[in-house]
Structures are given as structure tokens and as C-alpha cells.
Image (cartoon, rainbow, N blue to C red; front, top):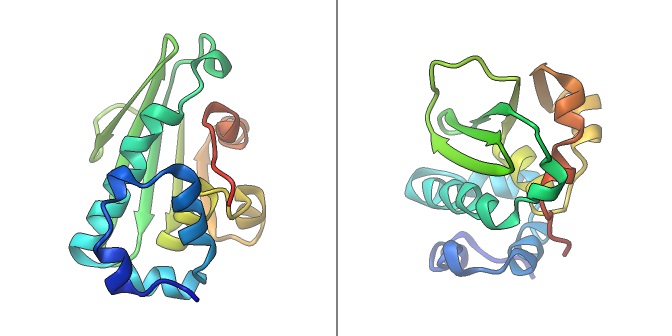
Length: 152
């Protein structure tokens, strides 16, 4: 049985393990995710996912990579985050900076949560035009190797 919005709203997403988060997302359809991702709930979920990137980053896979990745998640409103990778470190900031990104990714809420939880293929979403990529497409295809993606 899928979790309801009320069930999920009560969760502290900052303390949910990646495998548990993966199982929660796996139990929801794209339409259910899109319907749930509103208001303060959406803000908390997106904030927790981007904060988690720090722990899931694989510096050994990044090597000497230097890149700015801009994420635009559409839905109730546009949420923009930027990931800066340089010298084996990763930082995330909310909002759009002045620097030009190496790659920009634009997708809806479900299209974002499915792959970051290990429940969707970015390549399939790109081919289905549910994920838009601007800039270095090769960089975009290699993003999954830079992070430990959970599996449900």
C-alpha cells in the first residue's frame, strides 16, 4: 500500500535513509508524486534530497572535474538548485547564480525524484522528452557515477 501525503508529511526527510527514501518513491506513481509535491512539503523534500547529495557524492569518481550543474525542477513552481563540483568536493546552493552552468537539467518533480532515488532512468526520461538537457550532454550522462544512488 502506497503512503499517503499525510503519512509522508509527518516524516523527517533529513533522517530517512537513502534505501528507505528509495522504497517510498518506488511505491508512488509519477502522478501521485506530482500531486503530493506542493507547498512546504515540496520544499522539505527537495531540500533534503539536495542536502543528501553531500553524503552521497563520490569524490574519487569526480577526480579533477570542475563543473556547475543547474537543476530546474518544475511543478507547482520552479525550484532551482546548483551543484558545484571542483577539486573533489561538491557544494549545493539553492537559487540561480550568475555563472554559466556546464549543464542544465530541467524536469518535473516525479522526473527528478525517480532517478535520484534509483527508481528511474535519466536516459529513458531524456529519450521520452521528460528530461531536458542543455549544455554538455556527455556530462549529464555521467552524473549518476558521481553519486551513490540508492536502490529500493
